[in-house]
Image (cartoon, rainbow, N blue to C red; front, side, top):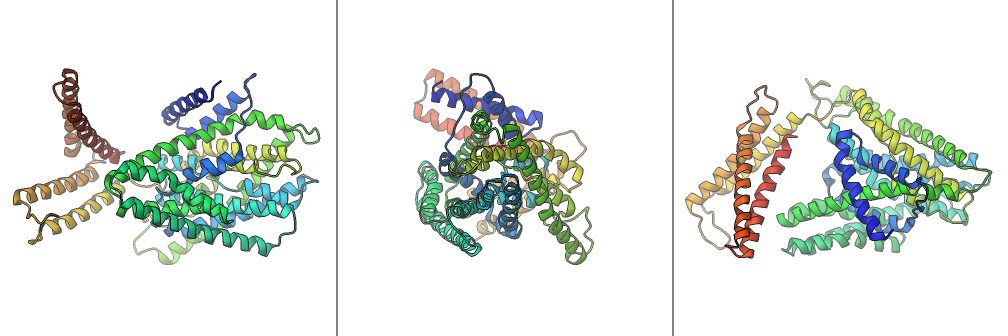
Length: 544
């Protein structure tokens, strides 16, 4: 079958699964992996082989960049201790723990090679975990930790993998590994920071959102390639560039540029994330065919993979639970404000044992594990079996932990985010924005950019628009949980305005058929209606 036909079918499958997954209450990546596995075992289907370099150097940078620009830098900085512990310390603990297990199970495997595979199966993938967390309303701080961990732990694991592979060819001391890790992290952060700042500066000088979005496609590779060339972590460099771009873009980019970038990268990230999960399942047959050693068969390799999976889960619980319980105990013992109880605890309060259980169970692996395993040297003993073990770990954690995570969240008793509180907080923020705008409008020396003094009627119109926005936010906050079935005034306004837009759009389409206006004018009118309708629909999402 032609490659372009396969690509089209893949997009159709991804979109179809993503559309129906919410109805099944199962994360789309899990379904896609299972579909890929099912297709791969059909007789006559050719094995799918994807070079690991394609995933690690071409697919992974834009994936991480798309996630990084959407993770607020403030959330990352606020949870830096937890993120660092999970993405660095836990990766090393998991790599060495599972490495010891594999070293015992494989008599001809060197300890360095065992550590290399341990590094491969250590990093987590937060795609399915984050989607489940947001759907069920996990506290935002916990979701930020899960997403931040998955951004950084890929870099830690790949640096450790590189050091372990180097150790297979010679003697490498612990100090050399530590020095290489520090060098890789520091240099990657500097390179990514420079790329992020420079590209933000260049893009801020461009008014055309198409141009700024086009440049954004190159940013992940501008950060990744130089860092890798000088021996640093290209993955961490991409994350640093993405975090700074997301942070400073809110200040220096134009609104059309931010909207264009947000929608474009959301689409690209959606396709790449789900495509790699589908490919992950499709690779099963090829992996099984590579295991031809009768001394270590496919069932034995899968069994060893299950043992490694169990050890990874145990190590994660042992690493996460003690500090989670201790931090909650210290907060309620010393730092909790007077009158605050567990029922009305603030959003930044430690989640305690319940949060520790959820965070421990959210350690699913993903496609990076499989791609990194395929980068093991060809002369590594048991290489096909080791890759199959990595695949087993990724599939089992994704399917088993991913499908049961919603039940773990519900039965853990963790306090979920309160939509009513978020609506009220949103209304308070809109009030603060309105006050700032009103202060500017009340300035007696107010002039426009060209030195023109605005007409008082125009000033009053702008003031009224800001007030209506604030009133709408408070109506949403105060009526969302009301027992009345009558829609709030802001909801009535939105529904009525959408109906008016529908009539206007029909009239516009009729005018196009009659060719009574020029195509340029009709296009501008379409864009105007699209912009207002998208704003109304987006505001409607605040109620969900």
